Length: 262
Ligand SMILES: [Zn+2]
Image (cartoon, rainbow, N blue to C red; front, side):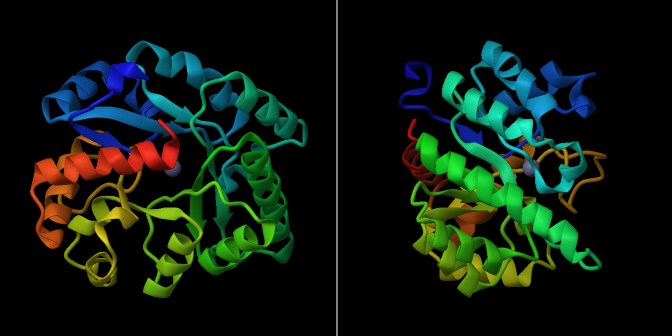
């Protein structure tokens, strides 16, 4: 990874830049992002079909990718996909297992949650086996996730992306070596609890991300999110933590190297 040693610039640690929503103008957006100082992306897979294409997709620009089976696309996952994931994690340059996790929205059946738990435990075991960090998705299930990580003995660390849980839940993740993904929600005037959590925790708890094309910041009228919002989120974080943008950039780079073994 010499191309990125001493990397100046921002890294979007969670974006789905391969999604078809970017097919029309991806090059143009990436040029714009580079002009704004964004230098690297981490692109997690959500299912096997998309994951199978991800290494080739990322190669020309040297983007980093992760491979995993997302809990919101349960209907797409089949048992043999775990064998594929095991094989692909061994044969590609995937930097993490993800995106996987638990999405416990209201009104779900117990059976659906049981299925999610199966895929969660199986992928956590693969991360442990391959010595890789995890990129986690958690909705309404932070306590369940940290309990299961603790029980599994997994110590590879990683990130819970787009974290907006409680301060206690944040501490639970950090104690397991799992950092907290911080996105455009920080720019929302209503995100009072998130700002309190950011204030209460050390700077090296947070990894900047967008989750593009999802989680469109409320400050924009754009129809999709893009990695171009990283510098804005960074500016908000730098102001809150009273560090310069250059200091934050360097700190993020050090942290990313540590978490993802780059
Ligand atoms: Zn995602």
